[in-house]
Amino acid sequence: MKKLELFDDEQQALAAMAKVLSHPARIAILQFLAATPTCISGDISDFLPLSRTTVSQHLKELKSAGLIQGEVEGLKIKYCLHKNGIEKLRMLFGDLLAEIMPSDEKSC
Image (tube, rainbow, N blue to C red; front, side):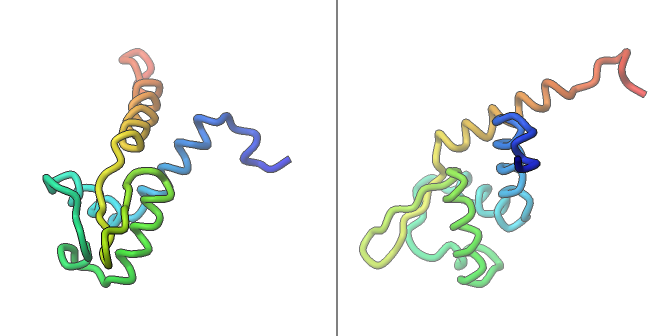
């Protein structure tokens, strides 16, 4: 039995999502896409202080986690936030924060 199997599915999903969000470049990419009214076609590295290769690696991680989607459009890829993935992220972290919020009598 793997040690991860000792934890429930929600704990594992939350940890996986936290790992994806553990790099500030990925947070910056999500914030950039959220602030952009349309999907970005082309190279996001034009808008961020990162190399094209670095941005590409981070986009791959975010896409694998289901937080963004990318569609090939000619020679470029069109990137957008993935609404269902962002909603799942909000629910996972919202549930965790609600669960661990100490009540006044439990506070140190």
